[in-house]
Image (cartoon, rainbow, N blue to C red):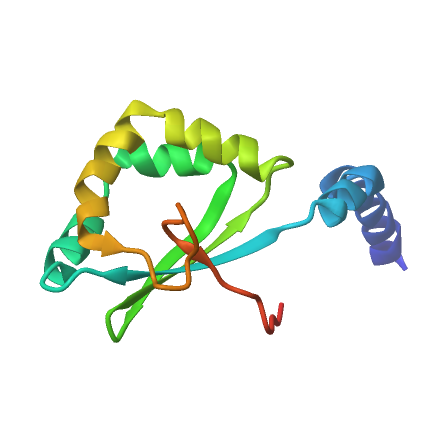
Length: 139
């Protein structure tokens, strides 16, 4: 029974200090991740350039994405189309996107990437990357 005298106090300390406080756990659970998906066309003859740019994405641009609460950001390619997926963890998506758009380094990056792209026909007036509807998700 000596082991019981050692294990139980250890478990108590572990539970008390080694785990997150219930309020912290609830706060994390309440934090809703918004999944965003977009589509855009790659201009004829620009795919290689676009891939090369993203192979060497600028660290400052990547840092800004994280600063505006973007995570798990991926761009896929198929049949002349780019599909973009990201997860947003902030509280005000529009404000964070405006913050990113105001960043001078991001603007310089877009001067290189935008000439490789063109909106899909159904994007709507003034829309660059067209929103996609989430049809299914599995956590």
